[in-house]
Image (tube, rainbow, N blue to C red; front, side, top):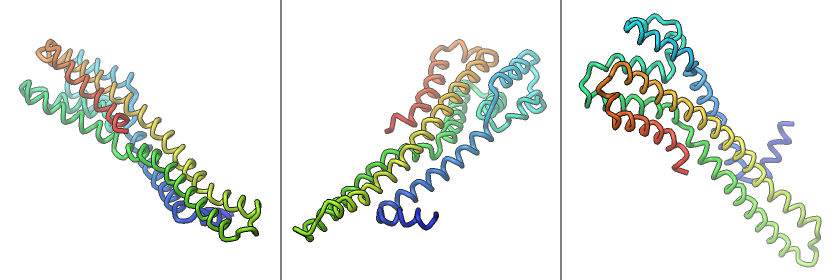
Length: 234
């Protein structure tokens, strides 16, 4: 079975092997991102409940002992809460800049490598089409060389071999786009959670910032725009 698959790919030539390498690459990226998102998963309801408890008790030590904060310590939301509480003593300008950097860092970590899936999804069908065109050119050259001896069977044989790269290109592109869209939705959802967390913290711990509508607007739009960068570039 394996030999048959290898033989099938060989018929498509070098471009087929390039597409197979791209397929292995996107599967590797997808697996790495899947592990990352699983490790940083969060139940937003539970975190919000613990956050309200922290706010009501005004006890920052709960960050170190609360079971939900400990359970989801690797999540973006918990990291933002910890960072917020540790730096809320800074003056307004310093605090704004620090929070911007941390939020940007967390979103960048989520987006890491995901754009490659979209790029390969765009390029793979074009490579497949290129391989098909090259195969058709070779088939027509053979037909021209055979002249009157050429028949439909020999031409059809060349056509199906030429179409191999297109099939492989689509096989690479379809899962690339599918996985990219799933990760995109995860990133968008978590970015909204970060926005909500910052809004809740500002309301309860930073009255000056909370009353400043420009501050809230700035942070909300910052996270929203950054989460959209992943698809606006394509």
